[in-house]
Length: 277
Image 1 (spheres, rainbow, N blue to C red):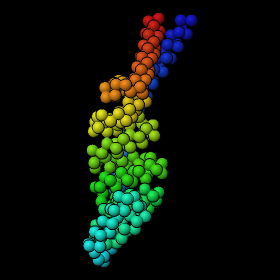
Image 2: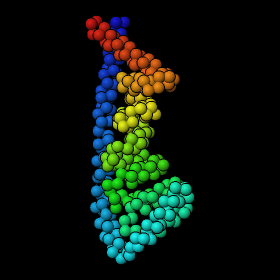
Image 3: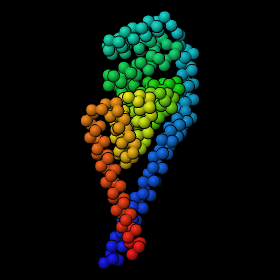
Image 4: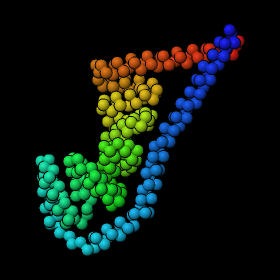
């Protein structure tokens, strides 16, 4: 009988060690996942530029050389488009922006607004076509990549959306809403550790935004990072002392952490007992 207990204790300890090793490996993967995504995005960008970029730029240069610019007409069309946008008259805004594009020397401002109109009216394909063109014309514009990420998300192309948001936050790291969207995408792909890092950065920009703090705390909890989850729930309660959701979550995490610690102690004791016998 003692041999059976020793065998079971050893089996439990082996399971614990294997689980610990798996946890460490997963942690390592999470830390490198964002770098890999960024590298993949950059590699894809270089491949696209190598295969399609030169032909596109040559045709664009020829198109621009043959085009006659009417600045006054362009400004008038943009002014009318802005008025239509303010009134949410999408049809008129689309018409005026297309007219502005016909007379524009710099296509980017009108194209970006037109892509926004297409997004608002459910014309994702047209918006994506415009934004892909803009991504080549203005590769340093973070709004272009954030808009592309929105389209990818709507079409459930989550990895592509992550790549686009990564590029957007690299170009403009001060947009907390982009960090939040990126974190939510990581959650969809079952990456709570990376999601927590995104939410943490967003929370640093707006430290009293409890919605972001809840996302951070929940992601830490999903990642079994109980200490940071408790710290974040406590921070929420400092801002909103009577927040019942935070109070309940705080108690749950405290219990969850305690249960985990008890389980680990019991398994350690069984292992030590088996070794001594």
